[in-house]
Image (tube, rainbow, N blue to C red):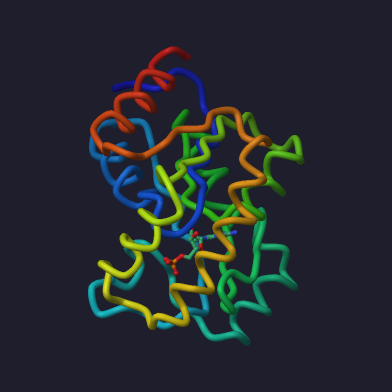
Length: 187
Ligand code: 5GP
């Protein structure tokens, strides 16, 4: 797939909605689409590569980047800082590429409400809260207290889905992907 124009393509929604799987598929299918690698102060999971999905930094390093205005947006999500660096986005745009962001709902909302870039925003939602809980437990990378915390946040986040251009229910991943692809191909 080739995306015409250069957009910020925002994929947001609760943790466990399927954002990472969706972003990975989009990146493998679109040649002129770059991934925005966020900075985070969260600990690296064993399955993760340094500079793959995230750049892992200390709280001091992160706060230094805030001071230097290095972020398009940043938020504290589940107790850790996460931020979208602005320079790599500008570099991608120079090459006429679009940039894909996998970010939380507050961060997405901040970007949607500023007019720096042309955005296409997607809110990915699980078919139900029960399914979301099952998915988070199956991931096996957080405690049950953490799962419960994320479920409470998910309920608040779902109420903000009206601010997004497209609301996609991820019940069946292939259907969800096709829907997103169809929208992006229509530009
Ligand atoms: P996780 O720690 O499970 O990888 O991500 C937790 C949440 O942080 C996810 O909802 C993810 O989309 C979000 N996130 C990742 N990077 C950023 C970022 O740069 N900014 C914001 N606001 N959220 C982010």
